[in-house]
Length: 280
Image (cartoon, rainbow, N blue to C red; front, side, top):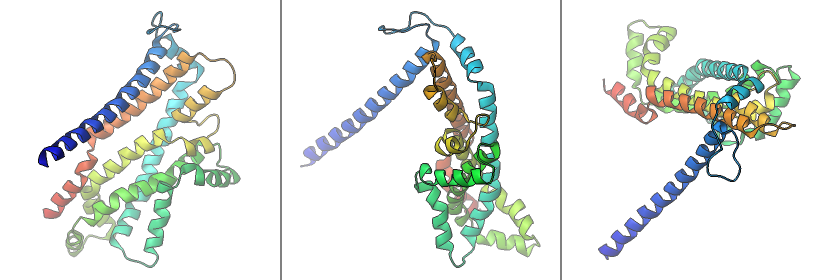
């Protein structure tokens, strides 16, 4: 009986690793084909291109105005990070520390943008922004990206705040700290690991968010992922190598943001850090 159970467990582990390996192999093949094509001179019916060159990247940089697109992407990401921090951190603190009528309804409103497909609420949101003259502007793109980003920050920070002993705040008030001083000098330092985790994840999420940016961006304020979409489906004849070069730039940008996130913040240790703070 135990031998049969051990064999079943081994077969299950082998099957899981086989599926994971098959997925990773296909993913690596797709990425490799894009990278190789972005460096190839011509590629027809052979395993590798006839030659290699880097001029497709310069063509993509000038043809698709990648410099301006990257600038817009960073501006949108920076503004969304700042806005999410300003709005999300106080809101998370209020939801974690205060009980009031309709709190569950407020939480439900915040969770909806995270569970509903972006196109579902993105179309009416874009209509509202265009009615107020914000559609097709950088401000409109930023506001649209804030809709899912602020709740994202809130739901990361609320459990973190709830694990901090309220007696820490009570002690600060005993020593004369007002609400602003309490929040700025006590809570923000204690919450910094959670805040950093939330904001770096917002950065990665904003760079990759397509739907809301696509619905609200104009010709001069497209982020990298939207510009890549337009370059693929735009009318006219375009060299696939230039499009693949643009895709590589997008992948590298996203990868750099992810590496930065994992380098400075480990989200899996947030709860552990909060418990250490509470113990002290």
